[in-house]
Image 1 (cartoon, rainbow, N blue to C red):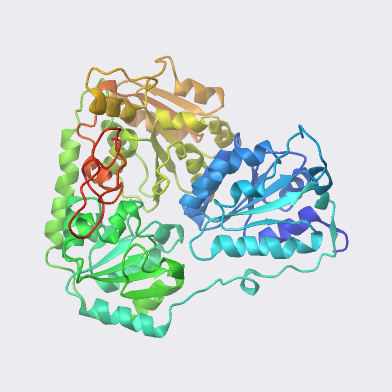
Image 2 (spheres, helix red, strand yellow):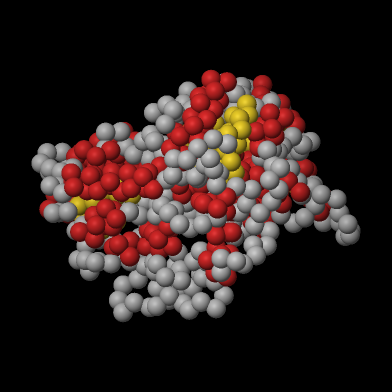
Length: 596
């Protein structure tokens, strides 16, 4: 096509990657691109804040496995996306951020008080995997392809492409763009020798364990991993990033951060780790629950980034490559190995169910005030079995993790960055990626208020997410932490806000469905009405403020503290002693290990 515009060329490059969605707020920098994208049948999603664009893109990626493209307006728009780019980097989300800027002629003029201008690339150099600028039109293809190459190679992450206004008027000859396999690695199998070494270790193991991280699910490898688990016939441990369970593997799946998970980790002699960084919350695979037997336990690690091997712990069999390619290799290699499930499995399963029941039994069933632990019980018991779970916030999120009443096949939260406020945009992205499934967000009001304007985005895009918000009109865990650190009678500066806040009315003002719940027995019917409405819905649930500002009974709180820091590290409150250094080994300490 002769006379192809810059916008058309960029969209050709983007669509070559199978991407059909753009995120960004309308601005003259991208008007032409957005119009052309809609003409092509692409989806253009405009949030109310640039950071929400990144968080929505995260939700879409986790449910589809597709990278995102973010189109950011020069100056303030680019500045606003910085927090979102940091989030994507920490959560390992591939995205190409196209950042507009003033034309280079203007940039180099010696002037003060320039409008909507700053030098943008230096701001992102430490938070993206690649930063490039299209200075000349003939660089367009190679810079965009490098951005996708870096975003999708090794550990996924965001990249930065600056697009000065001066090159936006360029014309192209319309020659075909390269296909992804022509400029980047799209398949990455492990070598046969390493696969055989892994097979030999697993075949000879007495107590193998399959350790699954979030990467297993965002890669959309559910079926392949289920086949591998069936071949291994061993317990599955979920990292702290994961609450989803593979189909048919309910009887053998356990959270690492649980008493049963600790026992399984302790007794394991071979660990096959897939889709995880073996990060701090997992005690780097060497401390806490892994400490016993650490000297003799063997590790097989599937990882695309060759530089990651041996960093957090020694690895016996590194399988360098894409889990989407390596998992079928392992399954084929293990065919006919004749393993059987461990004899302890019924006891472990019973102990897991007993632990969950004990948490359930702890939660008061009083009508009012509603205990925060009762919210996920009542809200999720009427949700469809294939519902996608999003959780956000502090205490509300921890109660949700323990007491959801369906078994999620997909779930997500900010497990690496440890942020709050991402839940609503993330739910929007997940619903975009799975229009035939329901999405439920379980969150607290402190987190929900971060991006509350995105309810309008959900309404505009006709995305019927269900938002169940536990409202205590406070930073609940922070109020609890104030009291834990400075006494029960301490003041709690700025930890509480107006009891007049009504999230259901705010939702209705945006055109969404709203419900206000004060009695426990009214919550499930409210969720059913929300489901039937076909609209985005916000269910404002007034919860017991005393219970939500206390650490008492919060599920897994001791394990949560153990996620932070190594022995000798100090992330605690001022004046507290550092955690003691162990004589050997490492990993998380459960004492003085966080400000909580």
